[in-house]
Image 1 (tube, rainbow, N blue to C red):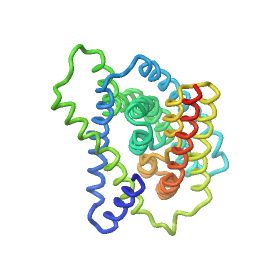
Image 2: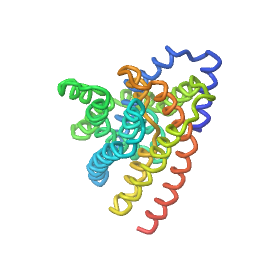
Image 3: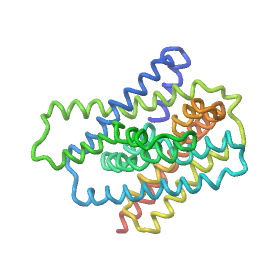
Image 4: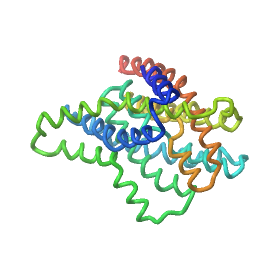
Length: 301
């Protein structure tokens, strides 16, 4: 279903139905309206004490993942020229776990998975505006903090947890509206991904560095996360969400930052395209493997 939705986005852009401006507007709608509604709605049906405890585990796991990505990014690209290595470092630290990751995680692991995925994004956003942005420029601490605390997806998580503590329920028409709007996340996100893929010249994307990065981002990192969490005997659902998040391609911000700060923006666009295109193959395989292995784990517990 996700693959076909991406194909529709690709097709309508090629035919001129979805313009570049419309795509930019649609991206903002998803990031600032639809996705936050989807995250907040995942709190409505009540959360058990066990799920709340696992949210703390997810937060710790995600922080560990981001630290690992940061360390690896300094080691994996030493032989690549600086204009490209900076882009590859950023793409290793920051993946598309929000815009593309949450819809995929929700489709595989349901509302609980979406909740864990939203919590997992908190450290990612912190690293995005600190360690990630510092690769391109030095930004004042005040500005970094502002970028983190004003992000709508972060606020959706904060307000969601706050909602669990208040002694009343929101009117049903409000929760129903947010649930309906949030249910559009997967469709709209994948249309935008397909639209983005339509804008890259397929003849120019081949390159050793792009393939090397994609192998690291889509295969090596999720394998490391899965192995580590399995050894630590983390909850199977947390393992699944964390691994699937680790398997996401480069974030769209990679190309935008490369262009803004004078790095190799053309290479960044190609890297983004190749990793996203390959993820259409790797993500279903990883999701299938995870659900198969985790089902066995749960059944034997």
